[in-house]
Length: 179
Image (tube, rainbow, N blue to C red; front, side, top):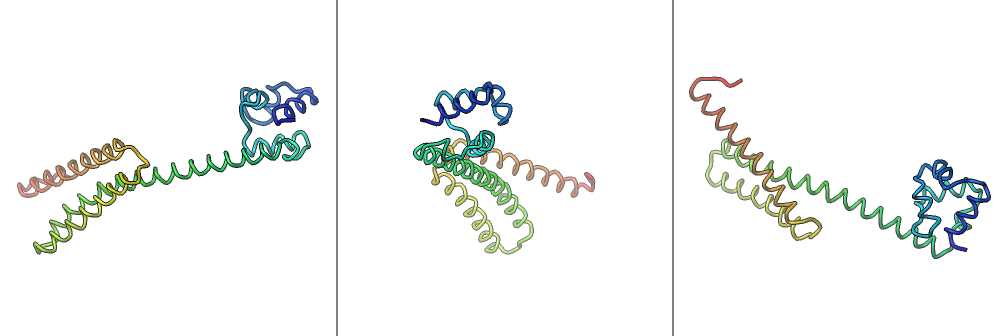
C-alpha cells in the first residue's frame, strides 16, 4: 500500500475530514488532498507530525522507495535554499565592492601624493572590482542583467558621492560652509 492510501485510511479510521487533519498538522487542506491523491509528499516535519498523530512509525507510512525519494527531494531543496542564500550574499558583496572601490580611489587620490603610489593603488582597486564582476559572470549562476544592474546602481551611487564631494569642496573654497 502506498503512502497516499495509508494516509487516507488512517484519516478515515479516526473519522477526520481533510480539513480537520490539515488544521491538526498546521497545513492547508489542499496539501492533505495532494498527499492523499498521490501528487506529492509531506515535508519531513509533517511526516513526523502524521506519525505522532496516528501512532505509527514513518517506516510504516512510507515504502523504502518513497522514503528515499522524499529524503532526496528534501535534501535538494535545502541545498538550493542554501545556494540561493550564498549567491544573494555574493550579489550584495559585489555591489558593495563596486561602490567601495571607486570611492576608495577618489579618497586615495586626495590622500596619496606620489604619482606612482596613486597609480598602483588605483590599479589594485580596479583589478579587485573587475575580478569580482568577472568572477560573478563566469560562475554562471546569475543573469548578466543582474550584474549589469548592480554595476549601474553602484555607478550611480559613486557619482552621487563624487558630486557631493565636488559641491563640498567648491563651497569650502568660496568660504561657505554647507553644514
